[in-house]
Length: 391
Ligand SMILES: [Zn+2]
Image (cartoon, rainbow, N blue to C red):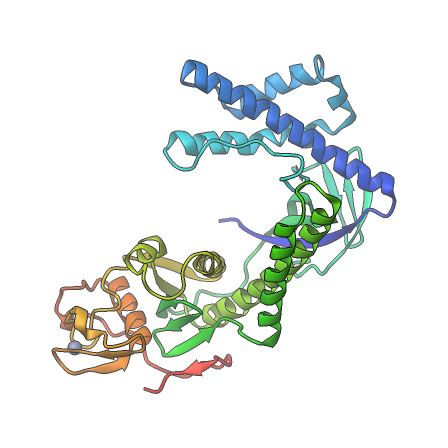
């Protein structure tokens, strides 16, 4: 099996001509994307079907490049035609009933970007060479010096250029003995079945950034649409959002590493169903959205660091993990869990995490507690967690 990792470098197009050529290539890719999205949309609307295959669009692209739109010959054909790949994937998904049709990329709403497939770029520690553009300086650390670069996505974010390099890596290490854990995700924290709680960063700087973000949002809202002053405020808002996202990203990496170092299998609830069943719980609206996206990030990181298995979310907070008795009244308050049948007392989140682990091992909500396999010994984690629940 192949394993991939992504490295993000900052690009330094030192001359304005170089920066402009990056921007122009992104523009060409965007133009081709919009051209084919429009064509396929019209075909689909008119005939009820369309030929979205990479193979067919590729041929049309060649015709286009040597006829009607010969200005495309100024750019690398391999890079520009690679834009058609995601269109094929999106249409395949759409006809499977997942996702929607690809949408147009607006000049002002879409970050300028293009993807360099294999053989269109050369990479070393100092520079990235792109076909028909030339050398562009870069900075950043490479944690996978032995990795083989496969693909580069070049992207402009808030005025700076970045290269996201996908590298193929060989994983070292021997297979580890199986150790399993359940994780309960709540508002602002994750609780593990071994009693360890990881809290989202909630410090002075985080609150300051949130305040700043709100201030800039108000600033954007007040200023006139299309004006330079609004564009400036938008830039400031973007910078602040980027800082917040970076902090969240670092937290997700720290937490997932701490978990993945110790456990080979992690059970989690299916969050979508949980979001619906526990709609009244915790914060709502935008806050919930932010939290949700954060959980998704943590989940993805865990998925490539260990194995993640999803279990149905129903009854995880109502079931007693000691005896298997499921009742609504079991959960006394947000934090406290008292079993009505056997009198077992526990922290509500920790109980839920243990239930998720039990469900992962084949227990059912209404079933008898005896069938639950107890594979987890409670112990202290070496990575400094925020809280260790007393057990
Ligand atoms: Zn009980």
